Length: 130
Image 1 (spheres, rainbow, N blue to C red):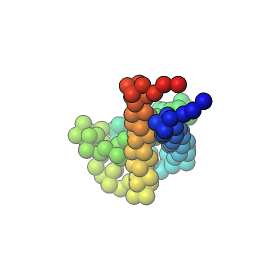
Image 2 (cartoon, helix red, strand yellow):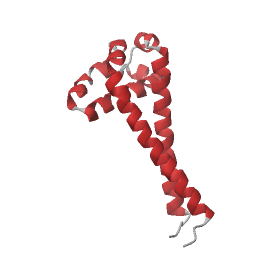
Image 3 (cartoon, rainbow, N blue to C red):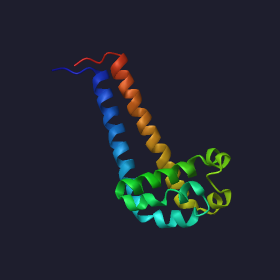
């Protein structure tokens, strides 16, 4: 069975996006278990975060969801500041190194998900045959 160059490249790009998404999931869970206390301490004035602290008691999925909310808050603070869910003082005093890591992780996760969507669209509309 011969594979075309397009089929091989789509396979590898799909594998990279799936593996990247999985790696982002694992890193997010790592931060959710080992950096959550520091993040919650520094974001204690944000109503968006304090109203979701109960997620810590719902297991790994809850910790993951809360860490995703924190990453979203740090990645797009202007959106949450305008709605009143965030405190500018808390965002400014958040540790810079951790903030950089969480924002990078947020955007990498979105990038890998968009890459998967693009691969699905290419497969659907360009007619990659078996």
